[in-house]
Image (cartoon, rainbow, N blue to C red):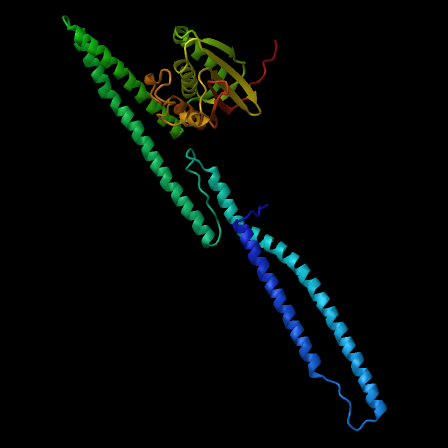
Length: 384
């Protein structure tokens, strides 16, 4: 049902159609009054000059009766016309609303279909069928725009993936040359220090290129080797692998990882997604802080929630963390060690699997990262 809010096209169409109906009704009634008055004036009743006196009196009496009947008829016609005009006003508003809904229905369909299209499914089209009118021209124009956007996004992602792949070879060559130079006997201490610094930067560039490749792969939707994956097991493994970092910061880890929280997708990408979330929780945490991991099922989704403590964050800044190279400021703990791609990779992998990433700044301080993915029903084991 169309809602006729102030200023909407539907409201303007309704007023226009109702106005046309009312003007037509008023014009029709005015024409009826004019014709009725002309007919009454065109048949006057007058007495004959040669009639006797009593006949004149009867004629005048008949004229008075006729005038009274005409006046009563005029009043009835006026009341009936006003009643008919009132009914017509209501009917015209209803008819105008129906016509406005019918006229705007193709636009509502186009609007709803366009809203469902996101950056992750630009391959979808409206494909409106019908006569070659203005509505179809609008739909074809939107389809053309979507085609150009899809080509632009695809070209950008291919460039990132190709550039990241091509840069790996010179990066490996630089690393090998550095190792050879440092390994020579009698190398000066300053050279060894410089080699360590260069190796650190090369490792950082290597992680950045790896992040670009994973991000491009997830955004392309290139999912291979789909299998059933338990989010709880991935989270437990990721936490165990980062015991060193957790111990170094004296973090308290609380786990509520339920079994059977299974989704289906690319095992490598899903593992990378969970690892990035846990990495983010450890790297950007404060000393003596805490981490809480939880898995749950809600309707047809499985959910992984990772909460960390820390300072109070602004939700507007938190919403930007899912974009590449976004951080919470230069003073964020450990931000100099990250590439700014971690949560953007998580968001891309979740979207590629039909899920979503939600970030929430906790009122008491810290961050809540929630990943929701379509669930897979695991058949219950039959006891032997």
